[in-house]
Length: 256
Ligand code: PGA
Image (cartoon, rainbow, N blue to C red; front, side):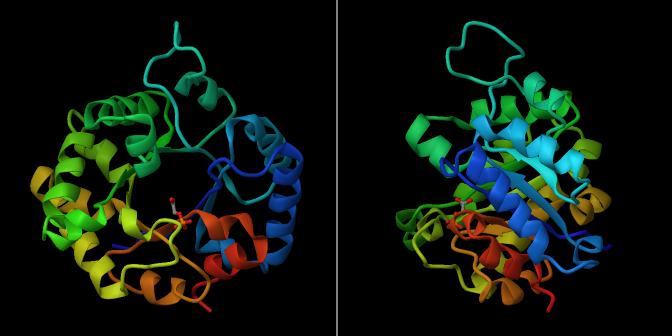
Protein backbone atom coordinates (compact mmCIF):
# COMPACT_ATOMS: atom_id res chain seq x y z
CA UNK A 1 0.00 0.00 0.00
CA UNK A 2 1.56 3.29 -1.00
CA UNK A 3 0.26 6.33 0.77
CA UNK A 4 1.09 9.73 -0.70
CA UNK A 5 2.84 11.76 2.01
CA UNK A 6 1.01 14.89 3.16
CA UNK A 7 3.04 17.77 4.55
CA UNK A 8 0.79 20.39 6.15
CA UNK A 9 1.76 23.89 7.22
CA UNK A 10 -0.27 25.07 10.21
CA UNK A 11 0.44 28.79 10.44
CA UNK A 12 -1.61 29.21 13.63
CA UNK A 13 -2.29 32.91 14.35
CA UNK A 14 0.57 34.21 12.22
CA UNK A 15 0.92 36.12 8.92
CA UNK A 16 -1.67 38.59 7.62
CA UNK A 17 -3.10 38.19 4.13
CA UNK A 18 -0.32 40.23 2.46
CA UNK A 19 2.35 38.17 4.21
CA UNK A 20 0.43 35.03 3.33
CA UNK A 21 0.61 35.76 -0.39
CA UNK A 22 4.35 36.46 -0.24
CA UNK A 23 4.99 33.33 1.81
CA UNK A 24 3.09 31.04 -0.55
CA UNK A 25 4.73 32.59 -3.63
CA UNK A 26 8.18 32.19 -2.13
CA UNK A 27 7.46 28.61 -1.11
CA UNK A 28 6.34 27.76 -4.61
CA UNK A 29 9.49 29.33 -6.07
CA UNK A 30 11.71 27.28 -3.73
CA UNK A 31 10.29 23.85 -4.55
CA UNK A 32 11.98 22.26 -7.58
CA UNK A 33 9.74 21.04 -10.37
CA UNK A 34 8.58 17.47 -9.90
CA UNK A 35 8.83 17.34 -6.09
CA UNK A 36 5.08 17.85 -5.71
CA UNK A 37 4.36 14.89 -7.98
CA UNK A 38 5.10 12.61 -5.05
CA UNK A 39 4.27 14.73 -2.01
CA UNK A 40 1.09 16.58 -1.22
CA UNK A 41 1.36 19.94 0.55
CA UNK A 42 -1.47 21.70 2.34
CA UNK A 43 -1.32 25.24 3.67
CA UNK A 44 -3.47 26.27 6.63
CA UNK A 45 -3.48 30.05 7.02
CA UNK A 46 -5.65 32.08 9.41
CA UNK A 47 -9.26 32.56 8.26
CA UNK A 48 -8.66 36.16 7.13
CA UNK A 49 -6.01 34.93 4.65
CA UNK A 50 -7.90 32.02 3.17
CA UNK A 51 -9.62 33.85 0.32
CA UNK A 52 -6.34 35.50 -0.72
CA UNK A 53 -4.44 32.22 -0.65
CA UNK A 54 -7.25 30.48 -2.56
CA UNK A 55 -7.14 33.13 -5.29
CA UNK A 56 -3.36 32.85 -5.56
CA UNK A 57 -3.39 29.04 -5.72
CA UNK A 58 -6.15 28.97 -8.33
CA UNK A 59 -4.99 31.87 -10.51
CA UNK A 60 -1.38 30.64 -10.67
CA UNK A 61 -2.35 26.98 -10.69
CA UNK A 62 -0.05 26.20 -7.75
CA UNK A 63 0.14 22.59 -6.66
CA UNK A 64 -0.80 23.33 -3.03
CA UNK A 65 -3.97 22.26 -1.25
CA UNK A 66 -5.83 24.92 0.69
CA UNK A 67 -6.41 24.12 4.34
CA UNK A 68 -8.08 25.62 7.40
CA UNK A 69 -7.06 25.34 11.04
CA UNK A 70 -10.47 24.88 12.56
CA UNK A 71 -14.22 25.24 11.98
CA UNK A 72 -17.52 24.93 13.81
CA UNK A 73 -19.60 21.78 13.46
CA UNK A 74 -22.89 23.55 12.68
CA UNK A 75 -23.76 24.83 9.20
CA UNK A 76 -24.93 28.25 10.42
CA UNK A 77 -26.46 29.98 13.38
CA UNK A 78 -25.90 32.09 16.46
CA UNK A 79 -22.24 31.24 17.03
CA UNK A 80 -20.51 34.61 17.21
CA UNK A 81 -16.99 34.47 15.84
CA UNK A 82 -17.23 30.95 14.45
CA UNK A 83 -16.78 29.74 10.87
CA UNK A 84 -19.01 27.20 9.19
CA UNK A 85 -17.58 24.21 7.32
CA UNK A 86 -19.97 25.18 4.50
CA UNK A 87 -18.12 28.50 4.09
CA UNK A 88 -14.76 26.75 3.95
CA UNK A 89 -16.03 24.32 1.32
CA UNK A 90 -17.17 27.28 -0.81
CA UNK A 91 -13.56 28.52 -0.83
CA UNK A 92 -12.41 25.14 -2.16
CA UNK A 93 -10.76 24.29 1.13
CA UNK A 94 -9.58 20.69 1.00
CA UNK A 95 -8.20 19.96 4.48
CA UNK A 96 -9.39 21.13 7.88
CA UNK A 97 -7.39 20.53 11.05
CA UNK A 98 -9.60 19.55 13.95
CA UNK A 99 -8.90 18.78 17.56
CA UNK A 100 -5.51 20.48 17.58
CA UNK A 101 -4.20 20.40 21.15
CA UNK A 102 -4.25 24.21 21.28
CA UNK A 103 -7.98 24.16 20.45
CA UNK A 104 -8.55 21.45 23.03
CA UNK A 105 -6.46 23.07 25.78
CA UNK A 106 -6.97 26.80 25.18
CA UNK A 107 -10.50 26.78 23.77
CA UNK A 108 -11.96 23.82 25.63
CA UNK A 109 -12.77 21.57 22.70
CA UNK A 110 -13.93 18.18 23.93
CA UNK A 111 -13.66 14.80 22.21
CA UNK A 112 -17.39 15.05 21.42
CA UNK A 113 -16.94 18.43 19.73
CA UNK A 114 -13.97 17.14 17.78
CA UNK A 115 -16.03 14.16 16.59
CA UNK A 116 -18.87 16.49 15.52
CA UNK A 117 -16.33 18.53 13.55
CA UNK A 118 -14.90 15.45 11.83
CA UNK A 119 -18.41 14.55 10.67
CA UNK A 120 -19.24 18.13 9.64
CA UNK A 121 -16.02 18.53 7.63
CA UNK A 122 -16.70 15.32 5.74
CA UNK A 123 -20.32 16.30 5.13
CA UNK A 124 -18.88 19.08 2.96
CA UNK A 125 -16.49 16.73 1.17
CA UNK A 126 -13.40 18.15 2.85
CA UNK A 127 -10.77 16.05 4.61
CA UNK A 128 -10.31 16.31 8.37
CA UNK A 129 -6.85 16.20 9.88
CA UNK A 130 -7.77 14.73 13.25
CA UNK A 131 -5.16 15.60 15.90
CA UNK A 132 -4.28 13.60 18.97
CA UNK A 133 -1.43 13.63 21.45
CA UNK A 134 -0.36 13.31 25.05
CA UNK A 135 1.03 15.78 27.57
CA UNK A 136 4.45 15.28 29.15
CA UNK A 137 2.81 14.21 32.43
CA UNK A 138 0.75 11.60 30.59
CA UNK A 139 3.84 10.33 28.76
CA UNK A 140 5.84 10.06 31.97
CA UNK A 141 2.97 8.21 33.62
CA UNK A 142 2.98 5.65 30.78
CA UNK A 143 -0.40 6.85 29.56
CA UNK A 144 0.54 7.89 26.03
CA UNK A 145 -1.29 5.13 24.22
CA UNK A 146 -4.41 5.17 26.37
CA UNK A 147 -4.76 8.93 25.88
CA UNK A 148 -4.06 8.92 22.15
CA UNK A 149 -6.11 5.84 21.31
CA UNK A 150 -9.00 7.18 23.38
CA UNK A 151 -8.93 10.37 21.30
CA UNK A 152 -8.94 8.27 18.14
CA UNK A 153 -11.91 6.16 19.29
CA UNK A 154 -13.87 9.28 20.22
CA UNK A 155 -12.89 11.27 17.14
CA UNK A 156 -13.88 8.50 14.73
CA UNK A 157 -17.22 7.58 16.33
CA UNK A 158 -19.90 7.24 13.67
CA UNK A 159 -17.43 7.61 10.80
CA UNK A 160 -17.68 4.92 8.09
CA UNK A 161 -14.71 2.77 7.08
CA UNK A 162 -14.65 4.39 3.67
CA UNK A 163 -14.49 7.84 5.24
CA UNK A 164 -11.78 6.80 7.69
CA UNK A 165 -9.66 5.45 4.83
CA UNK A 166 -9.72 8.92 3.25
CA UNK A 167 -8.96 11.05 6.29
CA UNK A 168 -5.74 12.08 7.99
CA UNK A 169 -4.70 11.58 11.61
CA UNK A 170 -2.00 13.77 13.11
CA UNK A 171 -0.10 12.47 16.11
CA UNK A 172 1.28 15.48 17.94
CA UNK A 173 2.82 14.93 21.37
CA UNK A 174 1.86 18.16 23.15
CA UNK A 175 5.26 18.49 24.81
CA UNK A 176 6.90 18.60 21.39
CA UNK A 177 4.74 21.38 19.92
CA UNK A 178 6.63 24.61 19.52
CA UNK A 179 9.24 23.53 22.06
CA UNK A 180 12.06 22.44 19.78
CA UNK A 181 11.79 18.97 21.39
CA UNK A 182 10.86 16.27 18.92
CA UNK A 183 9.81 12.75 19.70
CA UNK A 184 12.56 10.41 18.54
CA UNK A 185 11.70 8.79 15.24
CA UNK A 186 11.36 5.46 17.09
CA UNK A 187 8.95 6.88 19.67
CA UNK A 188 6.90 8.65 17.01
CA UNK A 189 6.78 5.46 14.93
CA UNK A 190 5.67 3.41 17.96
CA UNK A 191 2.70 5.67 18.63
CA UNK A 192 1.78 6.00 14.94
CA UNK A 193 1.87 2.19 14.61
CA UNK A 194 -0.41 1.91 17.65
CA UNK A 195 -2.81 4.39 16.05
CA UNK A 196 -2.88 2.36 12.84
CA UNK A 197 -3.48 -0.81 14.86
CA UNK A 198 -6.38 0.88 16.62
CA UNK A 199 -7.86 1.89 13.27
CA UNK A 200 -7.45 -1.75 12.18
CA UNK A 201 -9.41 -2.89 15.23
CA UNK A 202 -12.14 -0.30 14.62
CA UNK A 203 -12.38 -1.01 10.88
CA UNK A 204 -10.51 -3.48 8.66
CA UNK A 205 -7.12 -4.04 7.06
CA UNK A 206 -7.80 -2.03 3.90
CA UNK A 207 -8.91 1.00 5.91
CA UNK A 208 -5.99 0.85 8.31
CA UNK A 209 -3.54 0.49 5.43
CA UNK A 210 -5.04 3.49 3.65
CA UNK A 211 -5.39 6.06 6.44
CA UNK A 212 -2.58 8.61 6.48
CA UNK A 213 -0.90 9.40 9.79
CA UNK A 214 1.18 12.54 10.22
CA UNK A 215 3.65 13.31 12.97
CA UNK A 216 3.71 16.85 14.34
CA UNK A 217 5.81 18.62 16.95
CA UNK A 218 8.94 20.63 16.11
CA UNK A 219 9.40 19.10 12.67
CA UNK A 220 12.27 20.82 10.84
CA UNK A 221 14.25 20.28 7.67
CA UNK A 222 16.88 18.43 9.69
CA UNK A 223 14.64 15.86 11.39
CA UNK A 224 12.03 15.39 8.65
CA UNK A 225 13.92 12.71 6.64
CA UNK A 226 14.26 10.34 9.61
CA UNK A 227 10.69 10.88 10.80
CA UNK A 228 9.30 10.48 7.30
CA UNK A 229 11.23 7.24 6.73
CA UNK A 230 9.23 5.48 9.46
CA UNK A 231 6.77 2.94 8.07
CA UNK A 232 3.70 4.36 9.83
CA UNK A 233 4.49 8.05 9.41
CA UNK A 234 2.93 9.37 6.21
CA UNK A 235 3.43 13.07 6.61
CA UNK A 236 4.07 15.97 8.92
CA UNK A 237 1.94 18.66 10.52
CA UNK A 238 4.32 21.57 10.76
CA UNK A 239 3.77 24.72 12.82
CA UNK A 240 6.67 27.14 13.37
CA UNK A 241 8.83 25.86 10.51
CA UNK A 242 6.00 26.32 8.00
CA UNK A 243 6.19 30.11 8.47
CA UNK A 244 9.66 30.12 6.91
CA UNK A 245 9.49 29.14 3.22
CA UNK A 246 13.16 28.04 3.18
CA UNK A 247 12.72 25.69 6.13
CA UNK A 248 9.30 24.46 4.99
CA UNK A 249 10.60 23.72 1.50
CA UNK A 250 13.41 21.65 3.05
CA UNK A 251 10.81 19.62 4.94
CA UNK A 252 8.81 19.11 1.74
CA UNK A 253 11.99 17.84 0.07
CA UNK A 254 12.59 15.31 2.87
CA UNK A 255 13.30 12.69 0.22
CA UNK A 256 16.53 14.37 -0.77
P1 PGA B 1 5.42 23.07 15.74
O1 PGA B 1 3.80 22.97 15.76
O2 PGA B 1 5.87 22.50 14.44
O3 PGA B 1 5.70 24.55 15.86
O4 PGA B 1 5.90 22.30 16.91
C1 PGA B 1 3.13 21.83 15.27
C2 PGA B 1 1.64 22.02 15.39
O5 PGA B 1 1.18 22.55 16.41
O6 PGA B 1 0.87 21.64 14.48
